[in-house]
Image (tube, rainbow, N blue to C red):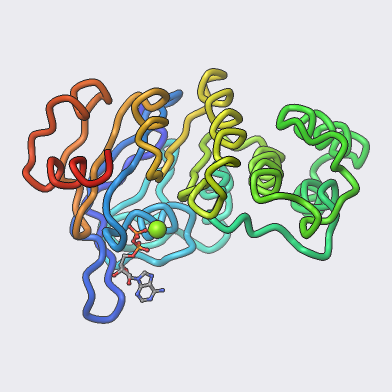
Length: 247
Ligand code: ADP
Ligand code: MG
């Protein structure tokens, strides 16, 4: 059963058609890497899934619930229920600069008010431990390295126990020597069977960790396949050219 089902998704900014009838599905426990040149619509696709962009046509279903059905969005009250199954990690971390690491993690669950504070605090401790940042609980984001910030962002995304994690170029803003610590956390999550979509330029990660690679160009999915076939035997001319330049 698919956790995400996208059919004929269309999205334009003004006259710029950015996503052209995209269809795509993600199975439970699957890790999909999305690759493709800058401007091909990768971020817009992820942002549409969590309702940071409004689409102009097509359908998005998360865990069998519609967010949009044939271009019509569900009622505002139902949107959060659907998008709440996903957590997202952004290229530029998007941490709250005025809050400590611990407070960054605890904010969303405390606002939701579904859990006793002590449980939220224990969960935050456990997740900081998982990403190796226990000693940074009381630090502010400005005192962290990029790699540490991104690990905080991942822990924060996990606080609401999402069924799916979306990553938009999580290592693209990092110095090369800091990408490894972030990729390691993501690899650990994949090994724990987290369902993930990762937009990335890290071909090594895509090859090693993803179950499937999807190549986008010009607002379309050009081809997809298991990494072994995708990288060793790309079919489309555009994929071959992209891999020649980037791999
Ligand atoms: P990618 O993530 O693959 O680099 P994006 O999804 O960011 O691609 O962008 C796809 C296209 O949509 C680009 O042409 C970009 O300029 C355009 N675009 C993205 N966001 C906006 C926006 N908020 N307003 C207008 N155009 C946008
Ligand atoms: Mg992008």
